[in-house]
Length: 109
Image (cartoon, rainbow, N blue to C red; front, side, top):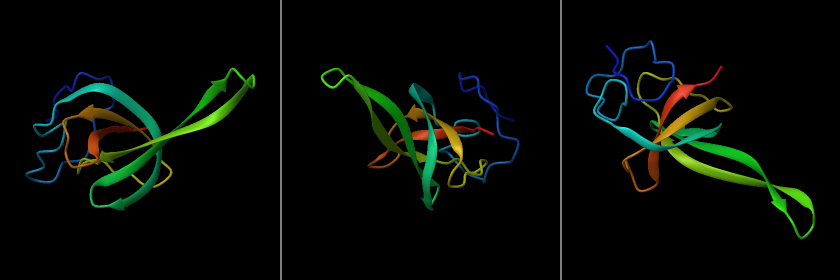
């Protein structure tokens, strides 16, 4: 049984690990605020990934665009499988660790 988290995403079909409270679909973790869509650049941590988003930035002085990169750390719930190179959507939540304030809610195909 998965609950509605208030965001239009595909709910995971796998069963979560028993006692996983940091899961927005089956646990007690509420999501709010910003959504972050990016590419997974590191997936080495335990239940944590590093996401990176590239965006063009316009410099009016030079009349050209430059590249900007933002990266965040996000928690991976136990019923999602995330690998390096995947495009994922992360939602903001309460702070889970010193640098983790987002949770992965969907893996894009």
